[in-house]
Amino acid sequence: MATSTPTTNEMAMIEARGVRKRYLTGTATITVLASLTDPQAAGGLDQAPVTVEITTGSASNALVVPVTALLAQPGGKYEVEQVTAGGHHHLVPVTPGIFDDASGLVQVTGTSLAVGDHVVVPAP
Image (cartoon, rainbow, N blue to C red):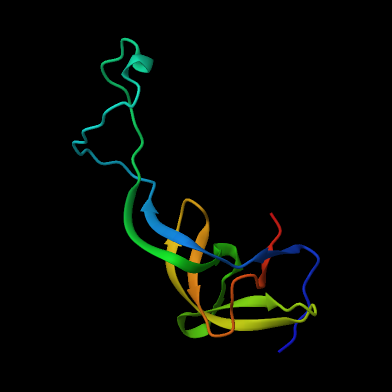
């Protein structure tokens, strides 16, 4: 089904890359042993705050799109708006996988998508 695209949208290229599911918010207290690669750079510090990312899932060579390209459909399903080389727009069903919160990407699977394809994303 061909659709028109409002001028407020942009396109993003589908990539194959590794994605990691990470949690970047919230607080917890855990014991972590860290060592400096250059202890001299710390000067006289004996403690300092740090930020830690915890990876809870990963996938290598995953087909990824910007999270904003996902279009929610009835029944908990998703689609992306694919733009062909000829400029035609088609809604393509996808299944989301791992969400990489830090990069804003989501792993997707769908029979009509390939690396290098373009999908529509909202303009920033």
